[in-house]
Length: 317
Image (cartoon, rainbow, N blue to C red; front, side, top):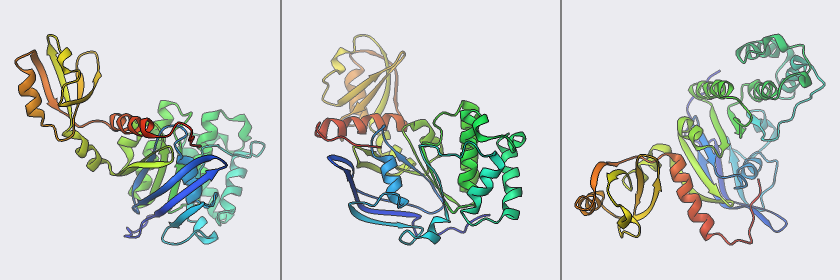
């Protein structure tokens, strides 16, 4: 099944906050997820990603703020249009794989005669066709995770929410899941996934929201975010004593690698001015304005917010 493009956001959070006792998990979070996109909710462990997802899915009620999902407030009818893969996997381990998937499909409104061929088709696609009559507890952890993914998409949801979906998967199965995400997006579905692994987000996401300590620190399309940072990062390789770069007024910070240095320029600094200043002092072998990775941006922005955040406040999930 494919879905027509919609101008209504698949998810809209406005001013969401949530505390658990003294712990502030989410703080005044607002974001929009465009329909038909792959959207990454990114952040370090404990940033508030899972809590934000649970609020969006009406598992938690926010202390403040509003949620609209697929254009409406949450309701039982809306729930059947959503597929959710939680971070804490939950399967009926004593049931046979096929029976459990049929049951999971039934509670999402899929009749048995429709579910049976879907189940077999998906099991074959994830190379578990021979395990339909095995009990879930007989499967490896990676196999169980693939079964859980099938349960998430079996009812052909319009919106698919994956909380740390690659956790525990080996490289082959990580690539398999990546291919499924791309395929589902091509069908017009909206995929939201949370992760702290930036390489996955960079390859898959159309747009991201980076949160830390429950606060949004960055949001937008991957291309626009990288373009914003690209003019401020230089890959520099040289022979000579570059000690003068430390504390240089045009340099905000540096990351050292084996063969070169990544230089993050100060705000409004012109890379050409830096080149003009260093050329008489060292032999420049490489000077290239580069597009930073999401990993670099993540480290940069999360480091800033951690330095600014009060130490007594702790985020959860």
